[in-house]
Image (tube, rainbow, N blue to C red):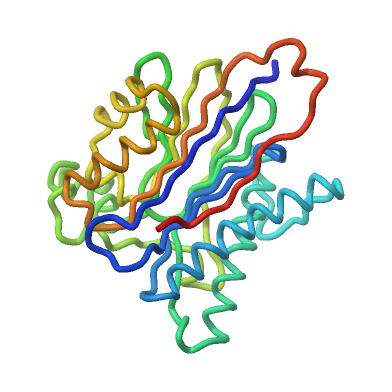
Length: 274
C-alpha cells in the first residue's frame, strides 16, 4: 500500500533569542524529512544545523538519482536498508559539521541535534541525535518515538530523578550526544510501519519544553490544516515564554487515490525562518 504524504513545517525565532539556530527541510519526492537544532552561538549554530539538513537532503537526492547510497559508519544489524541509508546520512552530516568546526575558529565546537525520517511507501525509519523529538499521533493518541540524549533524561533512565523533576531541572538543556561535537556519533534508529491518518511531528526542544504531549496532540487534532497546526504550535510555545527557537514539521499519511499511482514527484523545501 502506498500512502499520500502531506507536509508542513515552520521555524520561529521565539521570544528571547536574537537569531534562529534551528533549520528544517524535506523532500517528499525522495522521502526525507529533517529538523536540526544548532548550537555554538551566533552564526555557528545556524551553520551546523543547515549543514545537517542540507547533507541529509543531498544524500537521499543523490541516492535516488544514482541508485547508490554510500555506506558511511558501521553496518547495522536488524534494520532495513532504508534505516542504514539514514544512519549513513547522519554520519556524513556529523563529519561535515565536525570538519567545518575544525577549519574555522569562529565555528569551533559548533554542533547540532537532528531528528530525521526516511519514508518509503508505508514504511518509515527514524534516526536522531540529541534532544529534538519525533512524535506519532495515531487514533487519537500521541507517542514519543525518540528518547532524548540529554543529561536529565539519562538521570531519569537511571532512576535518579523523576520525569517531572527533569522538566523542572536547570540542566535540561545539557545534551550528551550531538552532531559535530566528536569525530564520530552514534545515532539511534528504528523501523516502523505507517498507517492511514497517522501524523508524525518532528520538533526542536524549543517547542517540546513549553508544550506538553497532550497539548501537542490536541492542537494538531483541532487545527484546520497542517499549516494552521504549525502556527498554533509555535504560538503555544511563545505564549509559554518562548525562550528558545521553535521548530515543527508535520507529516500526515493518507490513502492514495488510484490515479496518483500513475503520477510521480513531490515537494521539496529547506528553510530557516525568522
